[in-house]
Image (cartoon, rainbow, N blue to C red; front, side):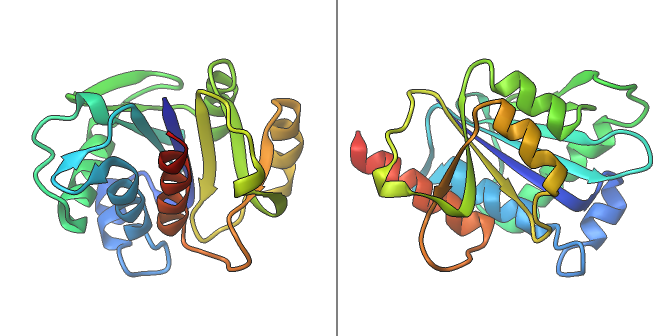
Length: 198
């Protein structure tokens, strides 16, 4: 199983603000681009992929929206507008939730009021965690575990205080190359690297 976590620190959990942030300072379109490149292949979905989007611009609880490729039905098409609408629908479904609750939005999509830190602690029980970092091990030299989880951020870097907790969970740092890339480009390179090893 391949898991991807996008920590979107600037993304609002209010659906109207989320949609208004497309192309603006919050760059909420990044979430749709990551979904496109993690879940879809030509004329189909990838098998055994789950994507967790963690939206953190909130006055109460972070929202983690999870897309499980094997369970998705009628996603409606491979385009930004449709995918941002699915995220907005999940945000609307999360209204009134208290801390660390889960709601099903539709087949293959759930929303949770759970923080990035708590999510990562859970994932570390079943996955080897990998984080992209300039000084990490070049990806082609990495011996990947069977269950892999890749941690990415939006345009706001991972806060330094997160590094110690990630280190305690055994997170490995990997490097995809000399250029700084968008998260949506990184997931394609990761998929390609893993696909070539099958």
